[in-house]
Each structure stands twice: as structure tokens, then as C-alpha cells.
Length: 339
Image 1: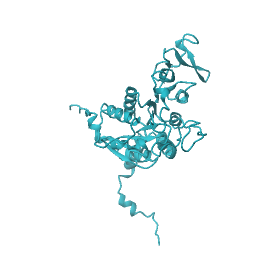
Image 2: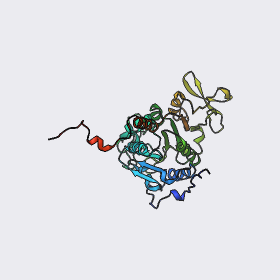
Image 3: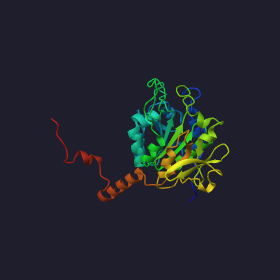
Image 4: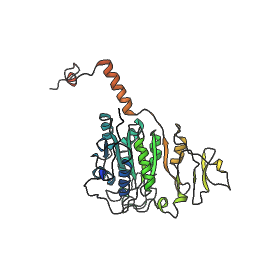
């Protein structure tokens, strides 16, 4: 039997007739464009793709992808997506959320979809602000951030999305940046091919309410000294002159100058496939100015997915008791009479 050819999609195939309604200059435009590019390469037909969102600027995403989509309720996109994946395991299901939707009202739902390892791809657009509701501080806003709801500066410690995902034992954890288009496409492709929950934090600039919060990670004049690109099996080197690296001093990471303070062999080598997430947790806590902030895949491991385990239980029950009929439930003895 001849092999079935993989479907060939174009960016146009994945583009709808809906007017894209984000503010001019919003980072969401770039994420949308790179998503369309990424999905032309993964070999999945449009009929097998679904985008599920909650509430927020990012949650308009399903309208602009020419696939199936659901615009659901605030913070509950992971819940809808879980049910969808269990009912239709052949679908490739993407959850699009933001730092407010996914880590505030939806934090509990995001936590459980990660720990269960449902075969979903979670995109968390992090702009460190509430954009749709016009500029309140969010769970990821930095301490001291001045907003409409924190006019003297936020006094709260921010959530670290990567550390949150790793603590929940997510099997794929990565970070990328809205305007780093080639890297963004690569990370989206890798997430699409991962079996299990893929969690991707995307630094996304809100032009209106938090413009420039990630300039240190996007401005070409300073980016090299502030961003560490992770590559499996490669030493953690960064800097304009590629002469800085990360070394472990006991259990404490430190920035060192290669050739002056240490040799290249002393620099930490990245292992994204390690079952033990200790190193990934250290990397997730890096923040400028003490450390460069990491982009790339921090962790990728294979574990049984929730949908695989659930299917196993269903199959075992059918083999033991037969398929059964839903009408039998209504005729069972275990019932109540309400006067």
C-alpha cells in the first residue's frame, strides 16, 4: 500500500476573512503570522486543528486561524480543551491564553492541565499587563510596576511562568519572543510535534499599556548581553563577544567570563531531555540584570499522557464489562425519588 502523502498547507489556507483587531504595533500580529507559518510544516490537516481561548486580547486568536476554534470563558480554556482532546484524541489542540487569563483566574486550570500531561499545546502570551481591560497590573507584572490599579507601584511578587510550568511537571517547557520570528516558528513547530502538554511562554509587547517592557530582550544593541539561547548539548554561552557563560558554583549559578575566570569546559551544558528538572528550574529563575534570561526549550521529556491513560482505562472497562448502553444508567436501581 502506498504511503499517504502529508497534507500541504499554505499560510493563505490558514488565514480567515476576519479583520484582525489588535492595536497597531501589538506583538500578537507577529505571533499570529509565525503560527500560520509553523503549521504549514507539521503535516496536520486544518480539520484536525483546534484553537481554544479564554478572555483577553490573545483570546481573539481562534477568529484569525482558518481551523476549528472555540472562544470560551475567562480562565477556563484548558478545561474546554481537555474535554475536547479526550472526546476527539486525533485532534491537535492549541490553548491560547495570556498572563492574566492563564495565571490569575485561570491559574488553577492551567496548573491541572500541566500536571495531567494532557496532549495540548499551551501558548501563554506574557505582556505583564492586563491589556483588554485597559492597563491593570497582572500576575506577571514586576514589583514596582505602576498601573491604573497600582499607581504607586505593585507590591506583589510576580509569577514566573516557566517556574510555574516546571513545578507542575510539564513535559515540554519553552520560552520565545514575539519579534524573534525564526526562533518563534521553530519553538511552535517543536511544540506541535511534542506528545504531551507543551507550555510556551511568549514575551509579547503591549504597545499601549506596557510598551517596551522587553526592550532589553529585543533591542539589538543590548539583546546579546541579556538573552541566553538554549541549545541541547551546547554550553550556555552569551554576550556580544560570546565570551560570557554560566557556571555552577556548588548549587549556585554564576555568570563568568570565559578565558579569564574559567575555561570553556567549565561552562554548563544544556540538557533539555533530563528527567530531573533541577537545572531547568534554575534557568527558569534567571532574570536581568543578574543573569541573562533564557529562551528556547528548557525541558522536553516523554511521559504517558492523560488521554492515553484515560483511553487505556476505557478500553480495559469495555473488555471487562462490555460496551454498555447509556439507557441502562437510567434504569439502574441506584436512583432517587424527588417529591
